[in-house]
Length: 119
Image (tube, rainbow, N blue to C red; front, side):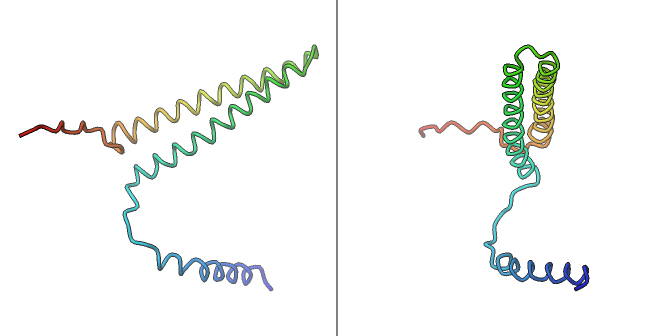
């Protein structure tokens, strides 16, 4: 088969499998775009911080294993430095994005609840 025929056939197969689940999906509120972005941001930050910590630990292990080799020590220091820079960038991007999504656009509720009173 030609390449375009394979692509059309595979797309049709995917749509045939996915269409019933989309058509029979429960109606509901998907939430606002801000809330969706905030949820994605929180999940992505967790993954990126975990990767940064792993890179940092890997750099420390390489630094310890380098012994006295100056080139291996230099490479390990570079890896540790890039992990720290990456963590700082992740933290900065998270702070700016959260400031815009929550602080300016009000993605999360910041209202103080009313105190119940006895009448």
